[in-house]
Length: 92
Figure 1 (cartoon, helix red, strand yellow):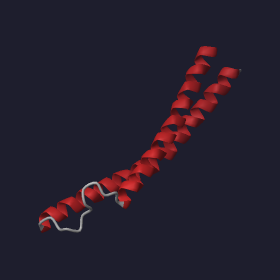
Figure 2 (cartoon, one colour; figure 1 turned 45 degrees about the vertical axis):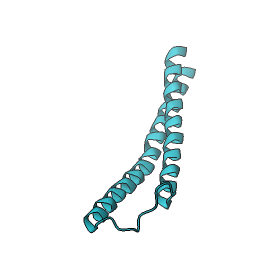
Figure 3 (cartoon, helix red, strand yellow; figure 1 turned 180 degrees about the vertical axis):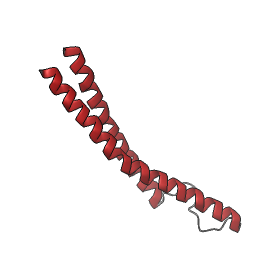
Figure 4 (cartoon, helix red, strand yellow; figure 1 turned 90 degrees about the vertical axis):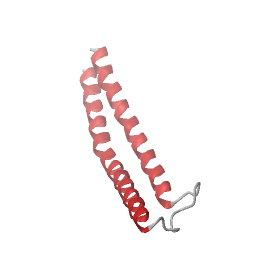
């Protein structure tokens, strides 16, 4: 009976992680798309001086770091879910 409980909890954790990881990945992809578009535009304009200097941290860099951290956290939750599912099979 404990194996069924482990399977249910593991499946719920994997589903929750998959559902929660979609948002940060979509926002990170949107940031990357916008950055690429800005680079193309600036190269077309002749490399405007409005870009951040090398090594300078921008707001987009901070946002990417926050999104990456969220992805890592929910990936770890999904990994714990997978471990619980496997443990349910081992205990069986």
